[in-house]
Amino acid sequence: MLRWKAFAASAPDIAATGIRHLYRPDHGEVGLLATVDALGNPRIAPVCPIFTDDGIYLSVSAHTPKLRHLEQHGEYVLHAQVGADDEEFQISGEVRRVTQTCELQTVIEAIRFASYNTADPIFELLITRALTVTWPNPDGPVKTAWTAPGTTG
Image (cartoon, rainbow, N blue to C red; front, side):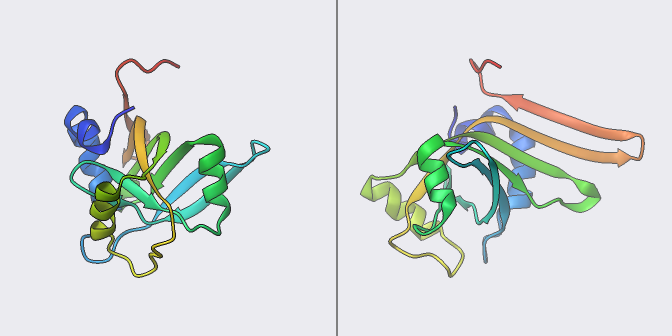
């Protein structure tokens, strides 16, 4: 699993697509976070990814099911809103709860949306897989996939 910065160095074209779809420096952007509940049922929730120089993070409201899902299972899939020409971007992997004060401060300073609550936990999205999909013509999609070195399955 890689942090965003290492992922972007390993797969710059895919990361550039992710930035285009998930990063708005003035107000933030919305993506769709997939998790599973305690029974293994899939769940989808809107989220606003937070980018720093090194990582991609989520602020997760302390009163939402997605907090329990991330704490119980630690796995996620983040899918960006579909862009122009039906361009898609998604990453998946595991989360890491951020607890160190200096890292928390860096993430808080990078938040571009108004709904942040200082009591909300912050998670870093560690990346195992990434995928972009474009539809240059009606005959079918063009997929570009990336998997972290050493990842199996």
